[in-house]
Image (cartoon, rainbow, N blue to C red; front, side, top):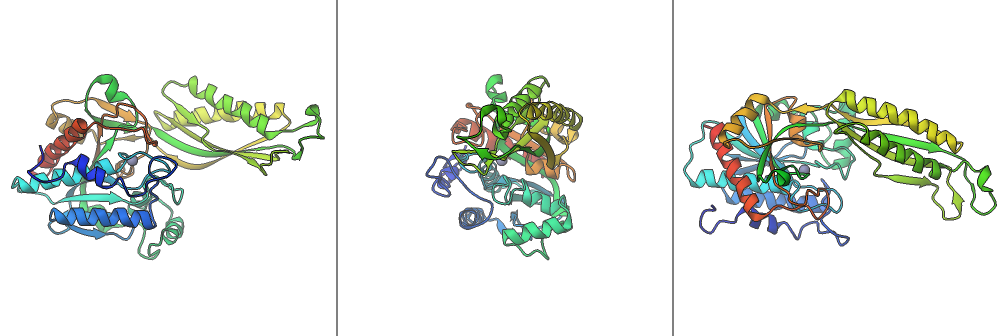
Length: 393
Ligand SMILES: [Zn+2]
């Protein structure tokens, strides 16, 4: 229940609907720039209205403190940026739920024994600078120093100040991120709320398939080394390899023919490859199979095959004692793994960290069809409020 006259989490979400709307559908909210500035201003205004002290850190993250910043705080939050054409819940749901939960604790006269803060991470989706969870990776020092400086510069941050922030890290006693579920785990179980058990191991690769550029009209079919045809074969191998590995996911999300002319046989095709599985060994084994069969398939069209890794994240297992404690607070809820990366996953290597998922009846994510019913949004706020109450007691 909301306090009289105060906006619910669903109503706060609706306040964001006009920001970053994409004419092609959904919302496009890059981590930096005018849309991000508008979102950050909204957050600061809303957090200040409930009595929190808002301050950015050197890595573009925004903190809203109940009282003065202090070490060992109970921190909750998520992100406000989105993928291009994303939905309205991924990220903002965790932020508005945190604000409402903290507002209710304050209104109810709760006396926190530990400081409490709401944290908004910058550029979680990596849609602007290509590095997912940028704010949390910078803060925890997960990126090499020169890369961190470069990215900070591109983001318009002070490159001398950005990077591992031990002061900020020590402020986080524990972190709880509420997030819309990005699958149908809860819908299938008929439950509104789950705790995350962990995050799948995840890597990204670039595949280049090289052929021979030529004329679409004069080159006989038998004489071609067409990398687009080879790419089609390779993509089918990616699917087959993933289907043969239980619980694994492999995706080719970008296909770019170079130079890309209608009457031109391409000289090269660049593919992205995203692979996730229960642990790092399973991901590596799957990619090894893709490399082996992909090279063979490309060779059938006289094409070369090269693969290069561009990012890697080990599997995350969220803090078990914390998860067990939260499970008791919530009276027993499902525990679900997820294949999506989160700032909570980055922080999990440094601090006790947990995630709460809210049911998404469509199961769709990173697209406008993602959804949470108002009743489930409210259940998420209730759960988060109970968790904060316990952790800060
Ligand atoms: Zn998210």
